[in-house]
Amino acid sequence: MALVIPADIATKLAKLLPRLGSEHVGEVVATVRAIGRTLSAAGLDWHALAAAVEAPSSGPRPFDLSTFADMMAEAAQATTARDDAGKAPEAPARAWGMKLGEDRVEPWTTVAQHALMLDWTFLKAQGGRILTKEERRRLKEWARLGLLT
Image (tube, rainbow, N blue to C red; front, side, top):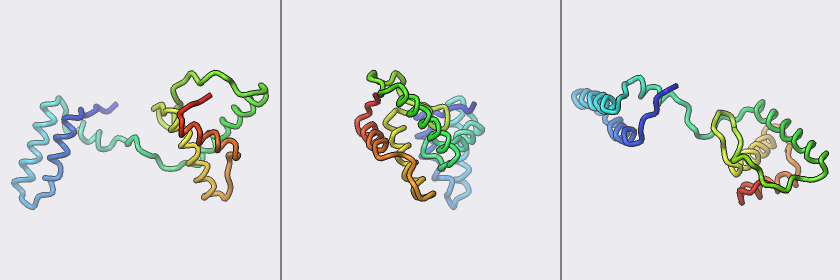
């Protein structure tokens, strides 16, 4: 597992890194030494900096149609089970959110927005929508209000 660079150290490094593009060799060498001292003072080394740069960001990930298909299959099973029970549960969801992709749990509003985005993307890529009009309406409501019942 990669070490996390503290925010104050990351801020210092962000100020130093542009100086590596200098035309003056002495300034570049001095900047490299300053970065090394900054990392060392935080108990880190160049390997930690490389791992932080290489680590995947928490931003949007590339669209993966196989993941979308699995997610939609699970949603269809859950919908079928709920419909078989006769009505939707009246109690709010106990979970704060669900995992999307990696181990990070996203809030329900983000999950709803992600599902709507995937439904729209699938429309563009495959020429048809997966969600019904009622499902899209409920997802929009969840994304707007953050309420999941």
